Length: 204
Image 1 (tube, rainbow, N blue to C red):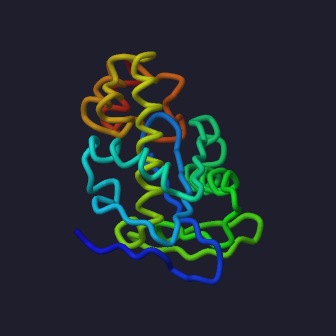
Image 2 (image 1 turned 30 degrees about the vertical axis):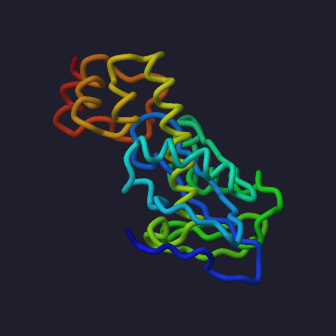
Image 3 (image 1 turned 90 degrees about the horizontal axis):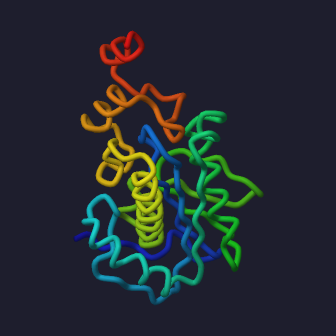
């Protein structure tokens, strides 16, 4: 397991930020922001995608307890359709960062694109969730909070396998859209079905 760095810089209060759910067909995009103390160490900490669901669930309360502060921003499917998924991801990050106390002075963003708000300084780190502890911690919080939402929505709309696929475009999910149709939680601005299935869906 790679050794993650604690800080990108030491002059300002730094928060790691990451999101989950950008590539999903249904449900919200969720971002988390985390400020970690100087002596923060969890041996298992890593990019949430490289951890099992059980590992993520076990690490989440540890992160929440040990962090100086954390915030979670949620932008639903209606807002995603209104402003597009990229802008919705930025908005979710803004909402997460605004919950932090103390306020972050520097945001460490996973990925290669970000649009700051309130003139906060930032750095974009490609694959940052496997390089910096604060981004890895944020990735775990974003993923687990979003998974909880999708598991809850799965009880409202059974048949789409959201409890397992969490809204991602799996074959079972798309087959359910073809069979059952769209739900209010599906992102209407996304292509929900491949072109061939989409034509079949619209003729039905």
